[in-house]
Amino acid sequence: MTQFLQLLFGGLALGAKYSLIVLGFVVIYKATGVINFAQGGLLLLGAYLAYNASQTWGLPFALAVLVAMAGGALVGLVVEFLILRRMVGQPTFAVIMITIGLLYVIEEVATSIWGAGNLNLGDPWGLQSVDAGGVVIQVKDLWTIGLAAAVLLAFFALFRYSRVGVAMRATALDPEAALAQGISARRIFALSWAIAGAVAALAGVTAASGSAQLQPTLSILALAAFPAMILGGLDSPGGAVIGGLLIGVAQTMAAGYQVNVLDRLPWLGDGFDTVLPYVVMVLILLVRPYGLFGSKEVRRV
Image (tube, rainbow, N blue to C red):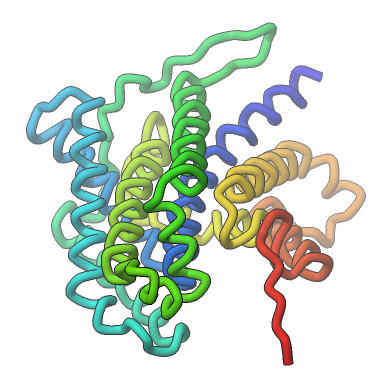
């Protein structure tokens, strides 16, 4: 039972990291209808900015995170203004390919500036842990879960109760109708990229904290979180969090019980836990192509 609870909490912590990453995907998709593959690059860049602010500039860690989020938002604005704004009205596929290119560009720039070695983020949580009835809980994981919950509440309030959130939903649904109602699509696109950049920086900090350390391969975590986005629904912040938690728990449980399973099913292979999220994604898409909580698209012909 102790092992199960240990794996369950570890899965929730991993799922919270996935949720923060997926929320960045969702805000771009809700506003523009585009899947932003550059989110991993923004995550990596935000983590490095937090490292600079904390270790190089000597700022308190909490302030360093805020500086990183502001920097991530600024990078998002610059990318939208210089590149993506020119693609408004162009095929969605072309915009997606540009975001893939941006991912590789950001990764290369980050490596050239900060190097390819591991860096200590200098977070105050470190390796601190608490013992809850035999279950060892990392303090950084508690913070990650709390931050994911806080960001989800902020997203819920933004999209449900604010005029900006309604404008973002309207722009994604029908840009021409939104423009006719006086909504500036360009401003909405810019704002969505700024929010995505800020959330990505926060996700990068949680992913690189503690023993994980900061390294250029951190951006891969965004692709690992991709099944969580599909599972929860491309346009659902709440679905993003639930999808992230489900994928995180499934992956951690598979890794924890992998030895026992391989004795009976050796053909699964040692890396089955890394493949399981994509297996879950495929199974869900076969039943609900728009995800568990995504909006069902109806087309009349």
